[in-house]
Length: 357
Image (cartoon, rainbow, N blue to C red; front, side, top):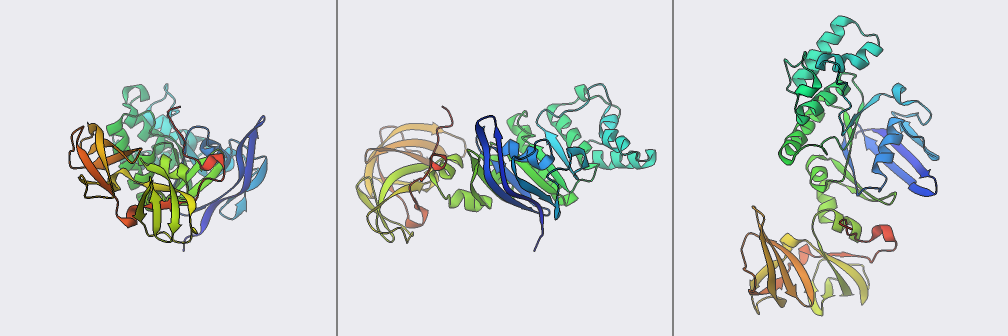
């Protein structure tokens, strides 16, 4: 079993009267790719800055490889940070940028040359030593920033939304580059993003945050398929979140209709939140499902059709490879395994949020 490399113990942090982190605890294991995911203002960047030594917690301790580093300055910690804005020195060549940290450490010229060659090969930019950052694309500059970080041989690489400034195709390419680098280098990645797809694609473990609290931790599959509250369900992918009543074990009432499910232990006649992913809604012929409705909108998304279906007084979001034109009368069904039952939120940070507000 892998050891914990980074531990945050009861971390709290405020800026003025605003509590950003409240008694946060987190463990990061060796060679793990962990992503802190959440909307703007959730506390993920502050968490990263506390790990990196750029911020000091008001309360709590930061443990690194078994040692308390809460009061250790950033330049003395065995980790490096890659920022969204690259932070390259524009007046320096690529090799000078990569060598910067090594020269501060007073490494030999031969050592530095070998490290530059190794790092550029690792990020697929051999032969770029003499070029200036301004001559490179955004993706190439980000790879140089990563090369500059890894030549210092950190045990942990902190990445603060490093792909946020890149276009979609380049961002997707860089996701695979980062996964490859993590495997080749054998170091721990702590990654910050508000992009759900990015988190699900790359991570060994995802930490979903909101309003300074960790809402859920788990594998990408667990986070997506078994959200623990309405916020996680709503933030990770599209969801239909519907008020329901748990009549008894394995039977829930939704919109006045009874649906079989697989959940137990919620009691009887108890109000619950019901989460159904759009791809799990089955549309059929009118009268042959659990409830009937009509298609009110249709968008072709490339790999599937996205439809709104008005049924039972609720507008269902549906993803399907089968096209049902607007105005088509359909039935709505869901197999029991794909119905997720959750307790009603106990606090505002557990509620689903409208990220467009």
